[in-house]
Image (cartoon, rainbow, N blue to C red; front, side):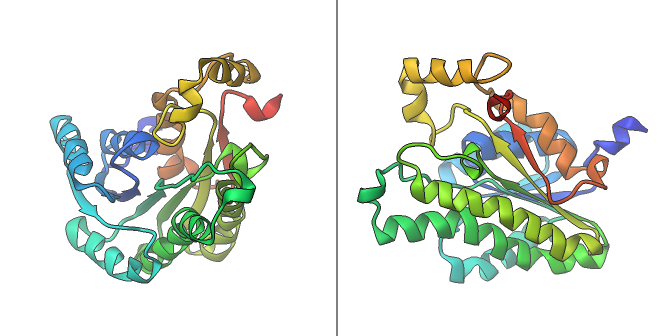
Length: 254
């Protein structure tokens, strides 16, 4: 019974940003939990590498290379995703961009690209997939929030604005669609080693300060996200919606 609560057998998921970092880790977690997974990202070569890893573990996968910051193109992308393994029951919005510029140096293009990919794309992809979820009476949307959803960091004004928006978007999605069986929650990771955080981890002193700020005394490992995302994507979270789960080792608790 308990195992069934966390099983994704028979479910189809779409994970954006599946080619690397947090998105790839999440995509593999859903594959191992039994879901058929479509990976969606810009870089076809890295998607192919992910599919090779997933298939080696017995997973059923497909991949689509697309620029998710092209908001007008998202309806066509959603149709292509649904044509691969069927319309997704689960959508994880993990694709993201962080220009890491001082506030005075952020350009209108930096701002647009960051907000489009981090905030607009999750909404419009969800909007495209929700009708099929509603028809089934079951769906899961998992957004990726951030420590910057609740606090500010240097050189992160566009990223922080987008992730603050993701937190409220998650609540608004939950209000709009949970009555139809489609829940929406978000994971807010702490400091994890990814392409977006390479500059942080290359500075050993800074990485050590971040680790010391947590309650558990270390920075995140990608495997730390497996349990939380499977929980939010599975029947185990049927009565959980509109929530932001900080997976940060207690960083925000101190």
